[in-house]
Structure formats: C-alpha cells, structure tokens
Length: 438
Picture 1 (cartoon, rainbow, N blue to C red):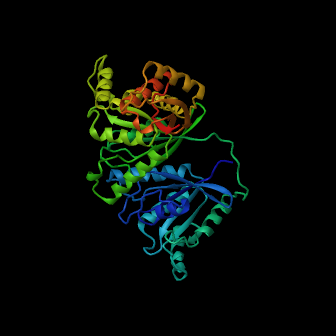
Picture 2: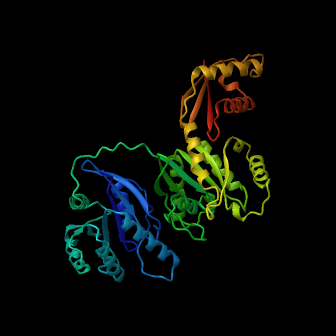
Picture 3: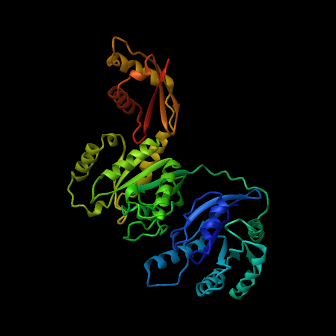
C-alpha cells in the first residue's frame, strides 16, 4: 500500500504549520503570527505506530477573489484535498466558528474524503468544551488538540489511522531511493515556473512579485524509472537586503535545501546576466560539495543569433572560471524550450557524483602527471606525492599522500584538478584534494 496523504486545511493562523512541524518533529514550515506565511503545499513524512504517514501543509483559506494570492492559495488548498486520502480540517477554538470555516466545511463535505475537525488551541483540559460549537459545521468527528504543546495529538493520529482502516503493521516498500534536486537562485528568476513546467502542473504559486515562494517546497516525480524529489526554494538575496524575519527564515530553508540535496540546479536570469549574487550562490553550492547544473532561464526574452549561447557561456566562465567545469543549459520555463534537458543533465551529473574511480587508474594518471610536471621544490626540499585514492563520494574527495602536505601550491592543485576532470569525466562535480602526510 502507498503512504497515505493527510491534507491539513483551514483559515490563516489556526495553527496548521505549527501542527505540521510538531508531527515531523522539526521546523519544516515557517511559522509566524503574521497571516498568510504558508502559500504553497509543503510535504513532510512521519511514522506513527509503525506506519508512515505523509502530511500536506497548505496556505490559509480566505474566500476573496479580488486578491490574486488568496485565489492561488485557495487553489493549492483544493489541490491538496483532491490528492489527499484524508482531510484534517483545522479550526481555532478561541475564535469560534468563522464565515470562512463554514465555506471550507462545505468544500470538505463535497470532497467525500474521510475527514475530521481538529479544534486547535485547546491547550488545557478546561478548554475542551470549546470544541462543541463546531458541530454546526456538519462534520461528525471533532477532536480538541493543541499544536503548541502536543496535547491529544496522539489520539488524533490514532483516529486518522482508524478512519483510513490502516493496519498497524509497517508497510515495506521496494521503491528506489529518491534523488533530491534543489532549485535555487535569486528572486524572480523562474524557480517556481521551472518546477511547475517539470511537473506539468501548478505545484508552486507563480506571480511577478519577488518573494512569492517562502518555504522549501517538495514535489515528487518519476523520470524514466528514477524517482526524483524536486525542491523549489525561496529566492536567495544578500543577507544585508533581507527585510524581515520571514524572509530570513526563507533563506535558512533554502540553505538547508542545498545541504540536503544531491544535485543543485542554479537558475539565473538570461536578461540580467550572471551577477555577483549568482556567483555567491555558486560558491555556496560548490563549498557544500554538491553536484551543480547552471540553468539560464528566460532565454526566449533574449535577442539572439546562432552564437548567442556561446558568447553568454564565455561571459559566465570569464566572470567565474570554475564554471567551465559545470554544465550550462539555456531554457525557457514559460515556453518549455529545452525543459527536457534539465532532468537529463541533472541525472548525468548525479551519476558522476556517486562514481568511485578505481585506485589503480588514479595512480596511473598521477604517475604520468608527476613525470610530466612534478610539484615545485621549496627551499631545496623536493616535494613527492606517493599515492592517491578516492576516500569519499558526495562530496568527491581524493586523498594524496605526500612528504610536505602544506607546501603544495594553489596553481599545482588547479593543474591536478583540470587533469583529473579531463581524464575521469567529472563535469558538474565539485572535487576536493586532501593532501596528507605519507
């Protein structure tokens, strides 16, 4: 049986994201007193009584067609209900029944999905009676809980399993492990548009307003037998330009997505070109040892000729020489131009990041390189590199044993890197040389 999906829906600020974070036992969704922090669907998995459950956190439901954000958030909420096996309708015990609760209750009943009402903010026993007022919503099962302190959340999970008729035996799945692809870049470069284009559905909310995406949004797809987890992230600005704490936490989520990914897709704006902020994002990805693909989006907006992409490529590698070792793709998320290349190239890079090069081949190459161009002596001391072996994948680390590890010059390390890349097909993979005392 596949993992059951539970959609958490409700008005803004009833505690959906607080509950979601408690279930996952980590701060996955951004929580703040300000309304409308969550906008897209956010997925997270937890285990209860030996069974895996997937929760879907959604944005706060407001019935207002004049506001584009509210309309989009409402669409995301409805989509979550459609794909879910169970609907957890959350309300606020202290505020009582509100007009938007009644509209949402009507949608829940029409969905014909198993559901229950979680009356949140019943932090103590003497507030449980507040749950009775919600019977007017016309949904039979009502449970008082506290997302903040976890009160009665275990009873709630038991009731969900009971309603879904799930046995308490753990399901063993024979599914291939997922490859995690994080999509990062500056605000408004088209990260959410690319996510939607790859999934062929509106998974992330897209508007011309910078900062629309706040959390790191997970989405799953299957590509020629490979299971891929796409992570759409908030735009990465300079820390000095972050205006509020929500934006600050959005950046933390994006940084976390980079660290937890297998491959990072860095989007840049074809119209703006490669900027200093783009360079700092590339630096961050390479320093984390993650496989990297640079994607130039909005290529349809550039006036070009047959050599435009070549000139753009040369300009990028001139500004950041290391990028000559990483693939660059020119796409348009809007017109779907060359979209198929994104996953093709990303999976090629992933295959290289998990490649283990035989020690024999490494030492054969090292011997040739040392005969052709040995490291420079210093103060009459002859530097000898005796042996090399690959000690790690993800990141790819080569250990080189030498008599003077600290005396190897930067230009010589660069020479070794270029030769290793040329001989072992390491495009898109950051490589680290660790010089050790023999």
